[in-house]
Length: 390
Image (cartoon, rainbow, N blue to C red; front, side, top):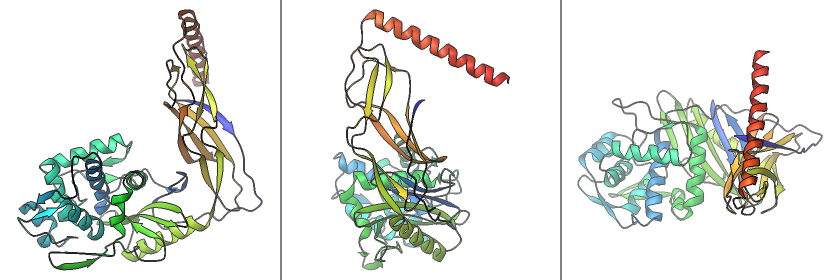
């Protein structure tokens, strides 16, 4: 990737309090701006336990959005689903009856309100035939969404001694959560329902944050014997949404306390600044073989950022793109991204798009561009070689 650097600074007299979290693994973002407000070992793959159901939901939600599934579709409850995730399993369940048929909407409510393992298995079998085939879909979807520290083996997150360890990083889980919330708001709302009754068994929402004053309205807690207590949570206050993932806590109480602390801190400790308005050029990058040698890049939305309140921040930004760019370039084509750093920490990465189209240039222009590219390449190679010698 090629980078073009921009520099700007925000300086205020007092240093902001940096939050120390007891969670060994944590990742917290502001939804609207994408600002990373806390990152701690966020790329480490961990057993997600029930948090893996987020990917199960995303696959179902996409199928509903595309018209391949309807909320009224019915799925059969197999003996495997009943035994592995239902009443006999002694795990989180919606108590779906063996050999019954359940509407997809009810299965989703079972998963999102009661963390139902039987609901997730019924959907996996209904969509892909079996859990292993569904896990293939989960991993393919993870790659489509750019999730790099993931390995799904089933729809529930339950440990499977016959399969490799299921792993997802906190960074990947929060990225997935943001995608689900943004793309499927009408389905996301089931998460906040206080209770759900199925098979004459009433259960309260399994998410301990729902109903508290944090503004939390969804996502999953999870527990793994090896990796401990984790949670993915989303909360909204005064129009601001924060999405947080934590893992590695030693108890349910520690997990709840830590998540409440992180959300409260996220809502009260930051100011929003606007770096660029919608369509405002962020910078230009070179184009080879075109009618113009440079193309301006801009965001589709205002490029905004959260900075710590009362902080002394040293923000640096750079345009990162896969170069060299070659004509033709279409207006609105995603060309690169703006990465914003605070000291050495990446705090935001925003897509950038070509502000206008550039056609392929005449032959002599393309020959000159190619020659220029070759010279630049040779010079850079020489510099690298000289540096390595020293």
